[in-house]
Length: 511
Figure 1 (cartoon, one colour):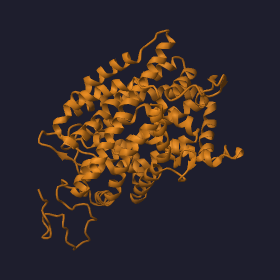
Figure 2: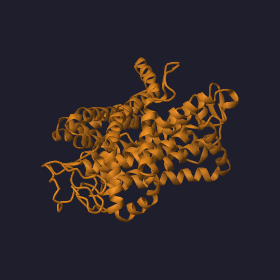
Figure 3: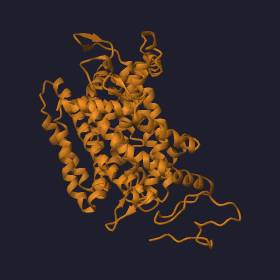
Figure 4: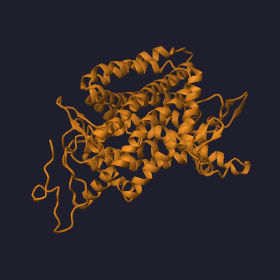
């Protein structure tokens, strides 16, 4: 098994960092180029619209997002909460800690960059998901990258949709299921040890699996309802706990930001002649962990947003970009700052180091737990509660993504049997020992669904841009996807409009 994880680490480093073993093949990884390039392209082509619409979209979410305004299965609020349940997970705790441990404090800067351009990718993919979703005979809505590939690109691209679904299943099992269960097990075992209790991994797994089953057996409506109530509460409670630590260590905050920006551009490493290596390590860790956390451009969140009760793909796309902002710019930043400001004496190679992320004997969520334990009374229990809730909501959210991929591949009949299989994934994940290797394999799993989605997004970018510009100019919404050619710029005065049923050049949609 160690040999497998070693090979996974080598391949993961190539995809994300451009290295193969000790050799640098590319300046940065393929996935880094694809992710940041796609997000930046949409940000520029949309005229920085995601940033301009950030705060207005927040207001619209709270005023109108709690009620549906069209066909769908769950409210826009619950759709965002379901997407956030997949985004706000161990990546916000263990992932941030791993990014700092692997790439230094500068990794956080590149995590921010990933989120900022990722907002544009999230807007694009979720607006397409609503635009091209399907309503099946059983009354359920199905959407996501596989459907905008099928309905937007046509039958000739069915192989790309299949690749995306296979990648989604791999990513769901590794990052959405096993890693989440493994991380919460670590926290539970560590917390029990402080009380002198030996807690076996299988006991945690059995309890977690039972809770997952109770929620996912009811499908997306049950998942959306639980997520809509639980995600805002857990995120708010965690932010308050982190704020307490930061307020009590306020004098260290300027230094923490200095480390983030200094390491991001190699300023602090330059004195030792390692500036280039330090920057590349920061980019690799920040982008990889940033994607793991916010999932922008990966294609998972639009599956949830496609179930929203809405007739407006533009608005739902705006709600989707809020998920990226909340996940990374707020929650991940809180975790990073706590790790960087809390000083202590942490074991490392027979001596002690001042910060938990520097310790060679701590990894993943243990780093975050150690920092919170030093920073506040009962900090270990705060992380245990956050880890448990974050992991639980991620597992139930990703169960829906995996289920939608399975039903696309083999048919709607597979939905209910798959839910039982997913419970087994949650249990087995608690028993895995090689955590670092699992994280690296998780990077490969994420890449396997990201690449097909990025290809589809770029090929359908004209639809996104034209659809958005037309809505901004005229307020028009696109009709059902089937057979129509809507999405071009509105015609100039006096010119024929092929999308207008009253115009003689109108071509009716093919059913």
